[in-house]
Length: 192
Image (tube, rainbow, N blue to C red; front, side):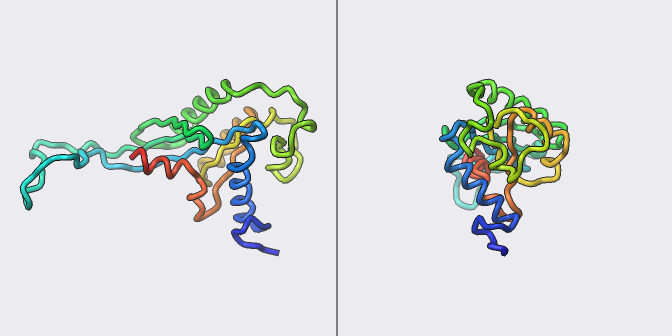
């Protein structure tokens, strides 16, 4: 039976339920939860600031002014602590995003405690089977971090997904029309 977006059995409902469960409980069992998103493009032009101008006479750019193109913002956000890792870039293809994300996640993973407890002895929310819905088909590194991000095609590339699993990172993809579940988007609005 399809239960819609209430966290039921529909694919989008399951995704939403898993993300909400991760935000509520994962940190309590030792699994870090981080969110990642790319924002932009933003126009690289001067933004209005505090200044006085006579009414009807806005500030103008000289005729020599050249627009600076556009910029994007890569963001990693840790809701439990409010920590933000961000990088400004001019574009965000996989060739830029994936190495940046791997470098940042490797640094984050290096700060997390090592897990020596066997998978079967960990709390349910610290086990792969809970999040995957089935036993992994091959042995995986201990689950140490959940990454909430949107379901863009580039985030599903086998190379990137394999890297995540190899390092104990579980990607949870937001459902279609569910980008509000990714807290990194809210932080980006504040940063911009």
